[in-house]
Image 1: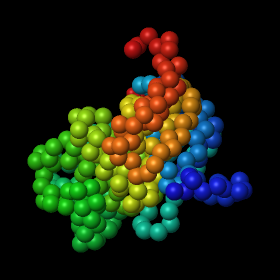
Image 2: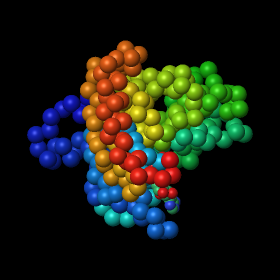
Image 3: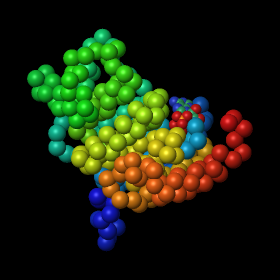
Image 4: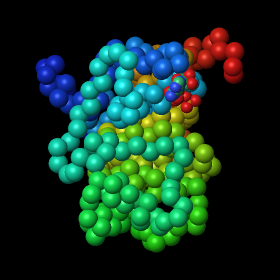
Amino acid sequence: MSSAKPSSTIKASLTALAVHLRGVTKVYDNGVMALGPLDLAVPKGEFISLLGPSGCGKSTALRLIAGLSPASSGAVRVSRHEGDVQIGHGIGFVFQEPTLMPWTSVRENVRLPLKLGGIAKAEGRARADAALASVGLADFADAFPRELSGGMKMRVSLARALVTDPDILLMDEPFAALDEITRFRLNNDLLALWRSLGKTVIFVTHSVFESVYLSQRVVVMTARPGRIQADIRIDTVEPRGEEFRTSTAYSDYCRRVSAALAPSYSGRSTL
Ligand SMILES: Nc1ncnc2c1ncn2[C@@H]1O[C@H](COP(=O)(O)OP(=O)(O)OP(=O)(O)O)[C@@H](O)[C@H]1O
């Protein structure tokens, strides 16, 4: 994995970054200072989680990286791929809600970004089917969203984000509304996809357990305005599975991440 490669020069390390935030702040029009200054470097191919109290600016950070909202100051640098069409600008976004169109099929939901990008129907359908197969839903292309469970809807949402073959996948609490067993399954499937596709993943979650299970690095943020409180590398044997989830190393990491998170909650009267 790219994070394991030593980089001997500053130039080399810069070119290996998928996302680089330097001194980034965000002040919304209503005067709320949501973020920063935030400094974050994410090497290509890394899986990181952002963890922090509600309202600390995690979603804001994802929106700035996706280019959906401008930073108030500082620099947001995102490495974009050059091949393929520039649909989605090399970034896939998965939200907490699957936000599927209820009136059309699963295949058409997944094809949407390609349709909007002007990709011909036949090619779009083939790519949508391939994306659905990658998330284990090859047999549900003709189904309608109402026929799917919550976990399956989230898989469709993931397929829609992957269909443009983005280099970077931004995921904003995607599994928060799912039951624990479904969440565990999706965690494992996401890790398998990440290993096979080699994408950079930035994953927002409120769950210490989920962040440690999934990530190579857990970035703990302070209360608003969000800054980096701790940056904890999760070193373990890959690929991860139930053995890791039940190991002492896993619980030790969870304790460490919880301890790093605790100061972000101190003094908060809204909890
Ligand atoms: N469009 C907006 N206009 C004004 N304020 C906003 C806007 N979007 C977010 N905020 C405020 O910015 C702060 C950070 O919000 P953000 O959604 O990024 O936090 P978060 O860490 O993702 O929260 P949560 O964990 O609850 O989803 C919050 O105080 C929120 O109310």
